[in-house]
Image (cartoon, rainbow over all chains, first blue to last red; front, side, top):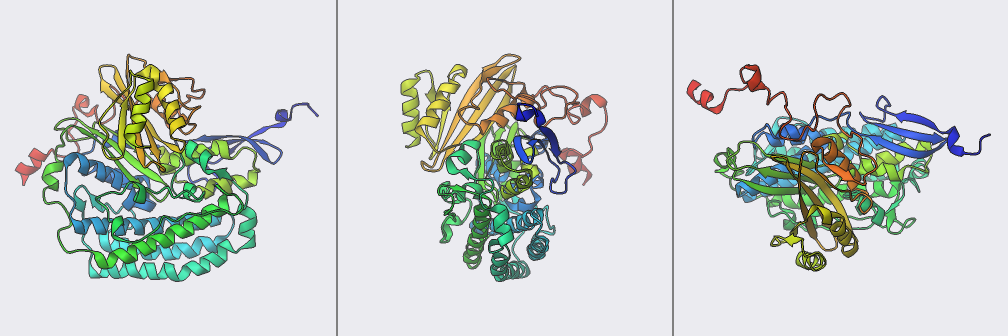
Length: 378
Length: 169
């Protein structure tokens, strides 16, 4: 028996072949059953999206953005669209503003449903993998009816949206909402009341709001600590319609961890996120005004942009998603585009969050942050 | 704290920092490279809930670079943006990772993409790029991509230019 416990440490690569590792790998240093060091590795999914954007014109760029996160495609393409609109000084019609907001919230629900299934499966609850994914299909059907595509929707475009609501697409969206609303109580019983789930997630991956903010975490991960940090309210976007409905930023006040959160609280928070999104869509759908869906000058104005800088921000499903755009005068392509994906910070925070926990808890901590490799690798 | 109050506090202590006119809730400070740590330290003191939102480089050409820092504060509803200009073939700036740990990976990415050094950051290994990448600093304008090499190769563009498509129909 040696004096230094670290002499017995073993290095284990978690991923990229592991079933729960969807294309990422983390190097863990383990002593016995405990992780003493965590070194997350990024880059397995890197497609140099920022460099690609420098070679695409201002209407093509949004298509690259949505491919970074297919689950929240309506939200992912928005920061780019917003930045182009700012520099080109486009005016978004009222109808497009409301339609955008509705579809962005639908996209948020869809993304959260996907995460429910994925996270539950990582914990071994396979019924919870399949059930929300069945309901997710209803949203995908409505996206397909509206845009012609299930995932790569390419809906937002500088100056408005590409496809108008039809009677059928609205009906399908309402059907998806009815379905998820009807199922939420079942899922609550299945997950939040499940003793297995509680044992697996309570007091796992605990951090305080102060720590989370220093690491750069945002979105539901911070809202689960009781801080109502949400760009939809904090930095209201004049081109979206969140001010047309009555809603509160959902937060979770943890009884076990005041001012902080554990994996269980983050699951509770994501239930609330879905309920808020449903309420926003239900309030906005009857308010869609008549009119055009895109600025008539959008095409002419986005061929070449004047020199400028703009910062497009949106509250994504996983947190603050931004794009910083710099253009040279009369250029057809961006000079520089910088994408800030929310999961870049969540993945980084594992470095601080994981050491000290057991090997079995690693995937619970990681899953509870709602990671998506596209957002850190870009 | 309002954006203009923050700017006033920073400029009072460091007169070589200048500020642009605030735009709504956004403020931009232009910071000399040697003042970065002082200013970021002040932000962390004056704005306790500052979120390190983003950090990245911009290649301005002729060996001039900009490093941008973004901080968001929920309690003040304020977006603070720092702009640092660097010069030289291997530019360097002080790291702020110990003040805001969230900036550690952003610095690592800026280092591999632009070749900008961050003094004091202990871990500047490659983050996203593979070890076997041919050539260095992919986001510098001098980096040759497959697309920018098309002209050298003499191959036709894969897509017709807008003029050609107009004449053909």
